[in-house]
Amino acid sequence: MSNESHNSNPLPAAPLHDRGVISRFRKYLPITDATPVISLNEGSTPLIHSPRLSEKSGAEVFIKYEGLNPTCSFKDRGMTVAISKAVEAGAHTVICASTGNTSAAAAAYAARAGIKCAVILPAGKIASGKLVQAYLYGAKVIAIDGNFDTALKLVRELGGIPGIEIVNSINPHRIEGQKTAAFEIVEELGDAPDIHILPVGNAGNITAYWQGYREFHTAGHAKILPRMIGFQAAGSAPIFHQKVIDDPHTIATAIRIGNPASWKGASEAVSASAGQINIVTDDEILSAQSWLALNEGIFVEPASAASVAGLFKLGRPEAKRIVLTVTGHGLKDPDTALTTGSYRPLNVDANLAAIRLVLDS
Ligand code: F0G
Image 1 (cartoon, protein in one colour):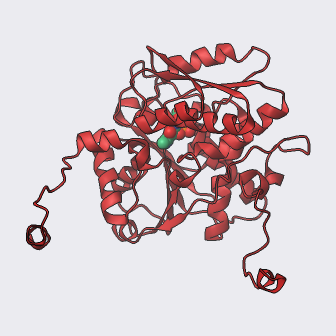
Image 2 (image 1 turned 180 degrees about the vertical axis):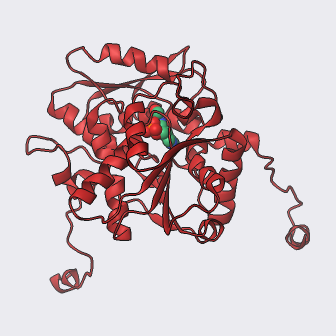
Image 3 (image 1 turned 60 degrees about the vertical axis):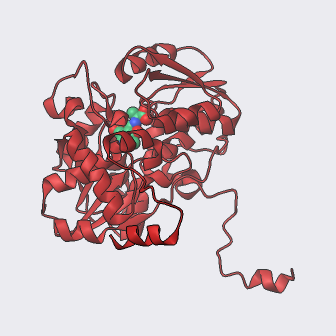
């Protein structure tokens, strides 16, 4: 190929190896020249306008589709920073408790960094897509007879061992990385939305978004701050009920958490932004999940559908623009959709007449 044809390429000359959230938002992150950047080009996820949600809610609604990150959840944003800082600090192993997505992201970024990863998970409560990720990325998968809260308690105790870094969101580098989703939204909309809705489990993400919006507001990039509205699953709603839930339950296993680590951060985000923590039932979550797939072509995992169920619950809130974060891809958890829905193929004879019959029905 001649030089001339190279020069006519209209794409900007961004270095191919330098496109993740650390390189894009470096000056807002705790990164120094000594930090090795461990990235899989996470972030830059689509902010998709939703005509049907806009019509229903009376506002312009946009969906931040975080399932399109490298390991198919928002966790990659925080993990690129947490693993980069862990490697900088000389860690040989990272460890986390998880309902599945954090473990997938930790395992992937540890593989990328060439360090070890161990994940502690509630046995039998991890969606298959997430579990298979942890295995394939080479993590030591430790299943306990206990829920996420117990797993996190154990992880906190292991964190004191030299060379082992905790990469749950109690590690502040995780929150730093996750705030970049708010930066991207402000960049695309030219300002913050009036309302931001997202699911809440361990409450790191709502804390991170609020931090991101505030930082861009302080830097003069956003004129307004959004009301932060978080939705917990009704059976796992400690912040909503203002009490620890000892035996949390929900079909949305990603947010099956009874004692969130970032409880305080979430409460601050909600009170400072005049927002709220609210709840949606499992039935509302499942019908929002299938509604979003059917009406907008966006397939998300159950926890992520809590945002959509939440907007339905709010009805027509006072707002011009609303952003919903959908946190994880639907393929993370195909089993829940398959077992709770009544999906069957239409078995027909292998001939055109039989197929025409189905098409015409
Ligand atoms: N949505 C999904 C898909 C999640 O995986 C999580 C958390 C949340 C929402 C809630 O975010 O915890 O910051 O409030 N998953 C964690 C995990 C707990 O281990 O993967 P949060």
